[in-house]
Amino acid sequence: MTEVHARAAAHLRTSTGRAATISATDAVVAAFAAAFRTAVVLTSDPNDLAALLEGHPSAVNVSRV
Image 1 (cartoon, rainbow, N blue to C red):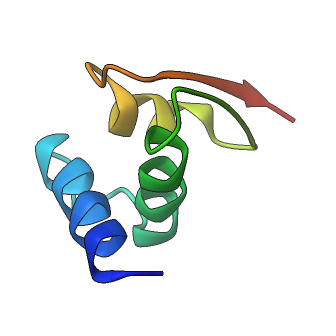
Image 2: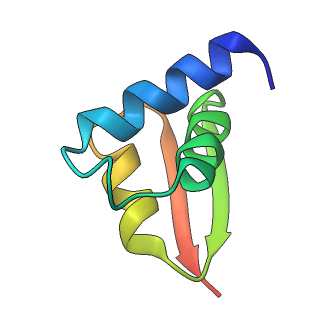
């Protein structure tokens, strides 16, 4: 992980207004996925990832597994 990705994850996490309840790991996954034009993220908790990626211009498909 680079500093750029870490800062992007922190920005996504704080922009939700729920930084205390969303894990840093979810934020890192969201930041990496958002770095691509399109991405698929498989997760057991799609709500937090969807909140992190809300309003982001990239097309990230978050699916429950």
